[in-house]
Length: 197
Image (cartoon, rainbow, N blue to C red; front, side, top):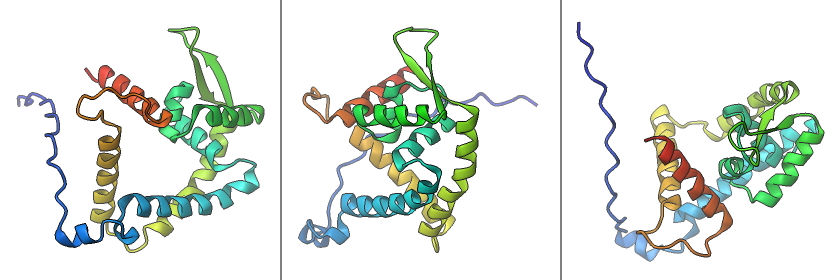
């Protein structure tokens, strides 16, 4: 039987501007209806709960994010990690130095560009991630109690779309004097888009 040709996914259509309902307009600054506020509040509590589980292991949440990002994709540069962990480079560098001192990561010069340093997990780093990942799942499972699979999938899809919308360049305007996190996220996104072609 002949295998059908693989179709290339179409680029997502440009979304129409969000139209607020009258009720939403009247409650524009109602924190209980603010996406940014609610996301931040939930993220802070999840981070606090997981941080408590990390303390006995001598690492903080920022260090964990680096380790988890490297477990997901080893050999990242600091710029890649800054985007994946939503961190400022200066703060990230200190965290990397801390986990490097603990023997959890190692720096390797890139085979392509000797000026670029890539970070890799050591065997001890991999063991730590493996032992702590279930603690992260416990926190996430507690947060998702009473959510259906459909609700979880819709939320994950929505969060990815929200991130994409915020990182995307604004209507072709020059991105001058933007926050460093946004600059790094845009650079990583552009590189990913370039590699996808």
